[in-house]
Amino acid sequence: MDQTDSQILRMLKADSRMSFVDLGKRLDLTEGAIRARVAKLLREGVIRRFTIESKDEVKGVVMVATSRAVSTTKVSDAIRALGVYHTYEISGNFDIICFVEAESIEEVNIMVEKIRALDGVTDTSTSLVLK
Image 1 (cartoon, rainbow, N blue to C red):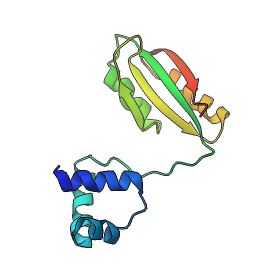
Image 2 (spheres, one colour):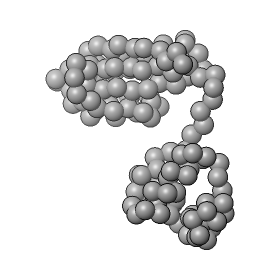
Image 3 (spheres, one colour):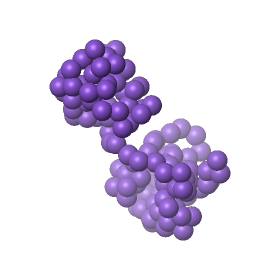
Image 4 (cartoon, rainbow, N blue to C red):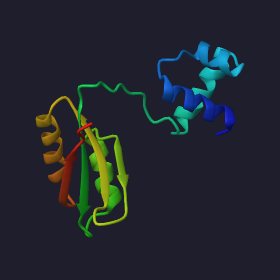
């Protein structure tokens, strides 16, 4: 990833709806060059997904402790398979932190229950984001 790729990422983070034509004009590149760079960033996993964030979502932070009998990576992968894209292995009293987004508190609770039911999960601690 070079400086131009970093600029593209920064601009897309600020306004993910910016067209490839507008990105190209700002960076003095063609639309095709921007399209090729974004495709490469997707292929390489630098850009993992495009998403929409709405103001009415309920957000929860879930800390997950895992059993020594099951690898933390296996549990992380299982959480991601549930659709929790922001999942990270961490150090400290818990092994995994994940950020759950849903339309209601009930839906956040359903996702937490699914996480708790996974093989290798021994404990969770959940906090809701207030603002």
